[in-house]
Every structure is written in C-alpha cells, then in structure tokens.
Amino acid sequence: MIKESTLVAEDAVDREIVPAGDYYMKVVKAGQTFRILDLEGNQAADTLFYNANDPSERYSAVDTIREQGNVYLTAGTRLLSNEQNLMLEIVADTCGRHDTLGGACATESNTVRYALEKKCMHACRDSWMLAVAEHEEFGMSKRDITHNINFFMNVPVTAEGGLAFADGISAPGKYVEMKAAMDVIVLISNCPQLNNPCNGYNPTPVEVLIWD
Amino acid sequence: MSEKTPEPGTVLYEDQLAGACHWSMQMRKGTSLRLIDNEGGANVGMLFYNPVNLLERYNAPDTLKCQHTFKLTKGNCLYSDMGRIFCSIVEDTVGWHETVCGNTTKAMVKEKWGEHTYQDYRNEWNQNGYNSFLVELAKYGLGKKDMAANLNLFTAVGVDDEGNLKYLENNSTPGDYIELRFEMDTLVLMHTCPHPLNPAAEYPRKSVTYQIRQAAEVAADDYCLNLRPENQRGFKNNEIFHLGAGCCHD
Image 1 (cartoon, rainbow over the protein chains, first blue to last red):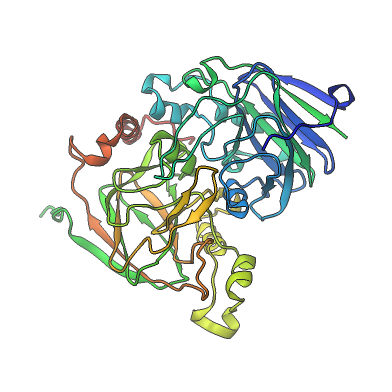
Image 2 (cartoon, rainbow over the protein chains, first blue to last red):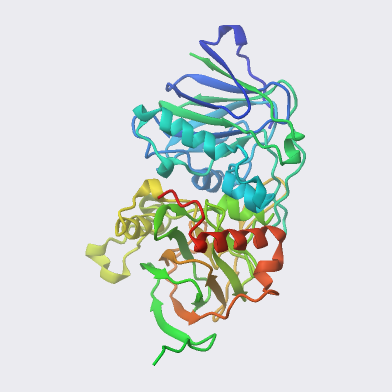
C-alpha cells in the first residue's frame, strides 16, 4: 500500500548516508520514526531489528508474516519479535511492497547461487559480522544474525509455490518509514551484491533519517 | 572381519513420535530419515545444526532463494547458512512442505485450543512447538538466539497474488512420507506439535513413524544433485567441507 509521509527531512534529528557495502547500526528509541531512503533506486537494504534492552528478542520474519497472514511488508505491517511483541510499525511506504523471505546474501550462499569462484566477494552477512564485532557494547554475535527484511526488494511467490526475483519496484527517492514501539537496535547492511540483476548490478547508497 | 555396509534402503532403526512430542538426534552422512504420517494431517517441526559447529544452522531463506521455490518437495536440498546441504529430499509422497510459518507458542495454543497443562492432562497436555525446540536446543547448550525459521513437514501454506497466506487442508494423508538423505553429519531437532495455522477445532495430536535407513551412494545422475545447478554447487561445497577445507568458523 502506497502511503506518503508528512515528515520533512530538515526536521530529522539524525541523518546518515550509508554507502553500498557498509552497515548501519544505531538505536532508535520508542516513539521515534525512522526512514530508509533509496537514493538512486533499486537498492536493497537488508535490515534486522533487536530489542535494545535485550537483543535476544529480535525481529522475526515468520511471526510477522504468520500473524498478518501475508508474506509482503508494506504500510500498516506490524513488525513482530520472536516473542510476538510489536517492535515497529511501517507507517509510510512509497514503494508498496518489501520482501522478508529471501534473506541476505552471504559469501557462502553466493557460491551456491552464482559460482564457487565468487566466494570472496563482499556480502551482507559479512557486513553484519563486522557490525557485531565492532559493536561489542550490544553483546551480539553470529548467533544473533537471523532472517531479515529486504527493504525495496520484490520477491513474488506464485500460487504454485514458486519464488521469483522480479525487477525492483523501487526508484530514486522511494522510501519506507517505521515508528518504533520499543527501543530498537537497527542493523542494516546496504547490500553490496554485484551478481544480481535486481539492482542492475549497481549497488548504490541509501540514507537513514530519524525523527523524534 | 570387516563390517559390511547394509544394503541401501535397509531400515536401521524405527520408532514413533506421538503427537505433541519432541526429540533430537544426530544423523550421519549417508543415512536417510524417512518420516511417515500415520493418521494423516501430521506436522513435524524440524531444525538442523552442524554438530561440529553449532553456529551453522538450517537457513530457510537460503534454501528457498537458491532453488527459486516457496514450497519444498522431492529434489529440493535443505541448506545451512554456510552454503552447504544438510540433507536432500529424495522421496516425497506429499508434494508440499512449508518453512515460513514458524511454531505455535504457549499463548497461541491456549487461545486456539485451551490450556491443557501437564498437571491436569499428563501425556495428553497441549505442548507447543516453540517450547519444544527450546528444550531440545538447551540439550546442546543452545537457546532462543539459535532458533531459525523451521521446517513444517507435511504442512502446506499457499500464497495468493496479493501475498495472503492460505493453509491448505488435507495436504498429507495416512501413509504419506518424506525421506531426507543426509549429505553431512547433522543434528536434527524435531517436534510433532500442530502447525500454528491449523484451523482444527480440537488440538491435533498426530503421530509419525520415523525410520533411519541406509542411503544409496549419491550417483552422478542423482535427482536432487541435478535439480538445479545451484544444488550441484551446494554438493561441491559439502565435498570441500569433507576435505576439511571448508570454512567452519573453528
């Protein structure tokens, strides 16, 4: 569902450009709203959420899609934790559909999907490994890395049970916005993937904005 | 005298799991696990871990994505997050098994079917899938952080054009079975608690039979190996792992 935001970028309390191949790891407080802005279009922002007070409570793709009875995420979606608590709600979305089935690229899964020789190419899960290693204050490790949201990705499921990787439905300036219902650690890998046509083989920056 | 390898298909062990039960075991490479739905309408929640590196676990998104599928059936391989294949679905009379709906919880079971506590109902209590996995995980020093999107064998959940989930009734009938051939040593966690979207009025308590069988060698023309080029590369990753050269985070 397309729903525009009324928030103005100039009023944001925090703005950060995240280049492709980098990660973003910050706490968004309960009541704050944050936006991921696709600056150049068809970029994938691979995103995980954790309860900032207890990271063992985290975003759960299976609980979120089962409880809303739908596999796609858009405005109105309540992002639930592994304890079925509301973490964030998507309050604005100019893209219309986001994926949470496809997971994140990893060097190891790249060998399966593309070629064994691709094993050392940069991948989302490597960005997350670096993020948890550089942020010991959160006490997280590989155990905490779970199934993510792919903001701006379009992965349609067919009635026959197939999975397609359709062309992106995002474009420059499209965004998705969420309001936090608890203090959350936002962990984004701005996807560095060079082998997937979904981003036109051209990973680009995103901007993350936070409003009080 | 050297020990002779049993003929492929030989049943090495057989047992049953009643409904609402959980168990775990290690499966060896080269053996298979056949699960048989005794009464129809069974659900088996399942998770896999690498016993020599418990951080390596079943990864549903990688499994679906690399095989361009939402449903799982014969020919599909079940992948770890490390690009390796825990097991291949070598036989399947059901046709559709799902892996995106997770588990029942204590609260969910209470709301849907009533809280039948152990104190009141003994072995007929209404156990839930989430706690079942927590118990089995804890036996290996694992906890909720180690949980992943699990398989729900014998249960099918379809998706319409708008993305709405639909629980498919009568997916599995009495005698239906699925057989998993293990391509590496694997820690298997399983429970027989009902699927969270099962609309049954009464708590469904469905038993399964499970058999550990001697598997045949993986031939060059193996169906799972050749289903997709991705699976050929997955098998190659297992081969490298068994050389001792695969990344294992030790």
